[in-house]
Each structure stands twice: as structure tokens, then as C-alpha cells.
Length: 92
Image (tube, rainbow, N blue to C red; front, side):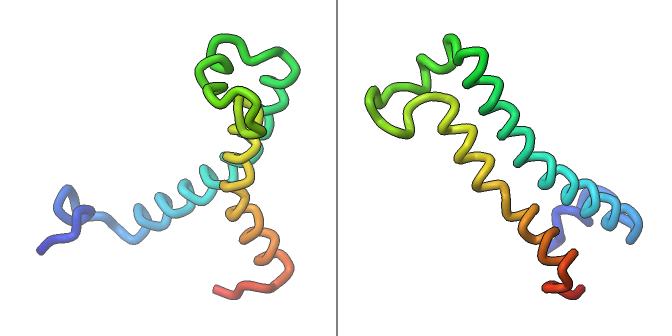
């Protein structure tokens, strides 16, 4: 069996490290992006997308704002890992 990465093209160590670095920054960008989307949606109104997401009328989790807040919370692990590294909690 071949590794899917090695089957396409030989990857150098620098390419793998660059991909890991990019993935880490993308993970860090997710939480603030979803938080900003929640604030903008709450401030400007949800519009048609909020109607689609509000199928559970009366539910606390109905609508786009709670969805963005939950997505922001679920993606916060990258920030928690970074904070732990700054404090010296995780050594690599």
C-alpha cells in the first residue's frame, strides 16, 4: 500500500512542514472568523440564511448566531493548545 501523499508526488521535508504550518494557522483563524460572523449576523440580521437555519422554532440553538457561536467554540481547541504552549504546558 502506498501513502496517498507519496502516491501523488514526492514531498520534501520542507513541504510537509510548510503544510503543517499552514494548517495550524488555518485552525487558529477559524475561531475568530466564526465569532465575527456571529456578531455581524446578530447586528445586521440573519436574512434568508437565518430562515433556513431556524427550523426548530423556539429552540435555543435555532438560527445562525448560535450556530456560529457553537462553531467558534468547537474550533477553540487550536487556541487552547497555543495558550498551553505559551505557558510551557506542552513540550514538543
